[in-house]
Image (cartoon, rainbow, N blue to C red; front, side, top):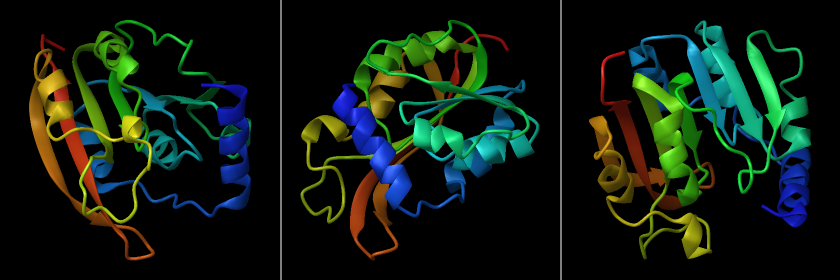
Length: 188
């Protein structure tokens, strides 16, 4: 990511009211993780980090935006790190649970697999390309192809849940999203 990206996200988090309610995928599947060390990739203002910390996880919350991370200062069991995902490398074999929602950087996919402990759980949800979507990123590089998540992660993980469906935002705009819950193969 560039300095421009950092400034863009800092401005977004300064000016935009973002929901702090965790998505249902995280609520339903986080409890399937065998341990308590979690990673929240591109955590934003920390809706999932807060939820996971409240459930007893020790959460590494990573984001490029200092403004977003500042909202998580002094939260118990949340450890903040301002990172650029173009250059940052995830710690291998470190996490029982990894959450990544509404952020897509395909170059991280292999790192995510490596960062999960054997038996660790991955939860991902983001936009998928669909011509009838009314609200999703314009740049196609930030849109998944149909079944892309499943096709990549099923090689190294057992798929617990996979779905592509329309979701409606607070403005009543529809977007196609993909949701994945997967467990890294191997014993935990």
